[in-house]
Amino acid sequence: MGMVVKNNMSAVRTLNILNQNSTALQKSLAKVSSGMKINSAQDDASGYAISERMRVRIRSLDQANQNAQNDSSLMKTAEGAVANTVEILRALKEKAINAANDTNTDEDRATIQKEIDQFIDQIDDNALVQFNGKYLVDGSKNNAMTSTRTILLNQSLAVSTSIHSALTDLRNRAGDSLEIMSTDYYQVSWVQNGRISFKSGRVGDTELTALADGTNIASMTQGSSVARLGINKFGNDVYTPDRRAGIAVLSKDPGVAGQLSGFTISIMDSEGNVKKAANAALDQFKQYQRAENMTEGDVAERQALNFHIGSEANVAIKVGLTDMRAEALGLKGSDNAKILVTTKENANASINVIENALTKALDQQTTIGAIEARLEYTSANLTTSSENVQAAESTIRDADMAKEMTAYTKNNVLLQSAQAMLAQANQNSSAVLSLLQ
Image (cartoon, rainbow, N blue to C red; front, side, top):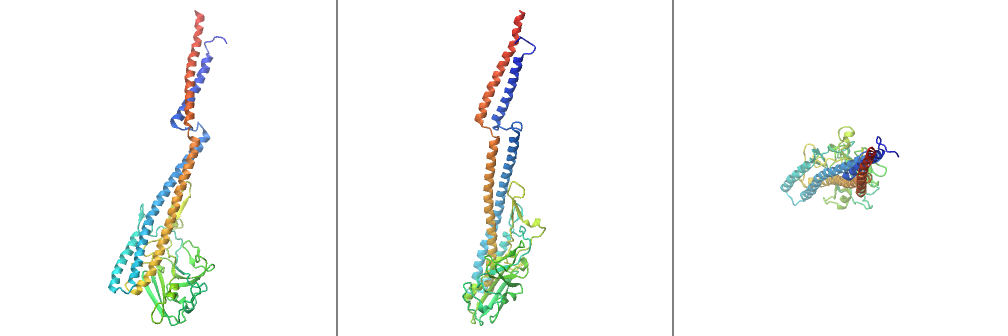
């Protein structure tokens, strides 16, 4: 090759290699300093887009997990209020049983009544518990699509029992006669709006349904696999839990105002002695469905609490919290009239009212506990999902530091070598000056 000075191709080629080495060194330096092999879309366009979507999902999952933990805190607040109400109801039943005992004087029962009144007021206070300014168990977070009737169900009577069966023909579930005689007496007590009422008479040829129909606030019906008892708050048909025969007492009017808080039947012989075998079967009209008011507003507003626990739209748990006020539990009326234990008869009638209220409270506590357990599993699942997505993102985005340090060292050496060779290439042109000497 001839000696030229205008175009030093050796220097040009070396300079090009120097620039390439410099660029490679800068990229290696960026990877080593950031710990990531993809720092911009230029490094890996498709990998960058995929990893960015993964980063968005990771943050979404982490926020959903935070939501689940906040939701759990809200439910624990509600559970605390309901648990306290359950404690109070246990104490109330104890007091009512005490008041039903004739070792107490009327003055004693009046003293017990004062204590009961305070307990019932505390139940109302419990129902006003708040979380972040939201009332939880005052009925405002219920999701009842329609008002429901009280259903008190008895499945202790023989499967052949009809609401038109004569009291004297009644048998228990095992088929044994209740041994009710026509000369016996019956007494029925029921509670509505906090007030206790009584109805009594001679058994004679009285039919079972007459015990409820005469109250003017309730009626009897038969339930089975084909005969429904009514509808629930979502408008679905309600049957007996095992789809077998049962006798139910229904409140005539739906909603809390028309609820039947307690229904007690007592059979006594002609001398006034309680017939325990008969009462054991007849006193089994237990709370099966509580009366609830339809939640006000349109359909969307009736959906109660929405716990968004996913990284996508519409991944939510909808939770309805029922009314835990004393009125909704049947312990007092809309005019603040509370159940009474001032007489033996009132105290006896109040026992079933408190038992039904306890059933309502425990049902709500069970619902809350189930949601809490679900949220705990949800949080664990979200944590695992976030961890796995982060591991996938790390595979795409994170740099192998040992590999990148090796590449950085190589590129650094090559850069320095290119610089040295460029200096040598530039010196080659000076050899032309020797021809001029």
